[in-house]
Image (cartoon, rainbow, N blue to C red; front, side):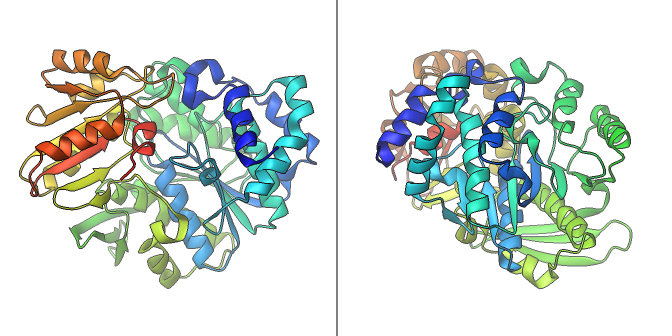
Length: 429
């Protein structure tokens, strides 16, 4: 079996949430426990940090990994889904895992796959944990796939648990209220393990506090510790002045992740790092500043208000739910352009009408779909958009839509590609 054959097996033989949606989601961690036991429970052989949340967990994970790596720790990073290459999910010090490791692991696990029929995600979690042990990482930053309580990653016993925020997403799996969604996310809070909550809402704060109390886990709310005093965006760097809520002591940070919404993630990251320092991790202020200024270079993060071309500017963003799109519209309000062209595609299990209603009706739209079964057909998305007052044309693939947008855009216009991780992943520019 070569690398491509291994990928074909993983993608085609196993239920994959990113392709088929809810049918691939397993609401317990039994299979993950069995898979990890088969490899000697690798999750217990390295230190870890666990990250959950509706939005921002990917950026937060990459920022933390960048800082830990810059501080001299050999750092694993597990995230999902990938944009271009499967191996983006499993990295050590910013480098994707080896192709040969993927081949070897897939071959070793095949008999067990036939026996217990795990999901794609369950396999990749076990694969990541085994790779981190083989690579002898000092610490691994582990991003939750979906929810928290029943997520496959929730078999780790981390140094720190981080929940970025709570918003409306995956309601068909996590519940139809913010409270029920918060309960699922709070499931990563463990006995005596410190927890950092990024943003909270009035209806969710008590859920986190009560869970922490049950688990005797120290809990801190990042938005109560620091605030953004000022910011500016220039030369593709986001400069943020952060103030301590109690002392008003201020510090400047330069982020190469220049979406305005990264200011919220920054506050979460800074509090998480403060907690790690209290636990004895050697992380200096200078290290934090240096790492945050080059997160993309260190970790290979893409698709977060990412400028990939100029005149016209083309920006990619993986925002795909209501909260994410709301942050995008806030970004558009501070962006400089003559006219906005929006290339958008979504998946079937998102609340498309709610998302579309948040977008500007002054934009020109290019509706499209990724080449996965879970994608909402471009024509159907266009019809939904018309009901909310958005007009445009539909295209059968992402790059055709972008090419058409470029034909209609002037050099001072902005082309935004958003709505789905899978849409951004198919961009060829």
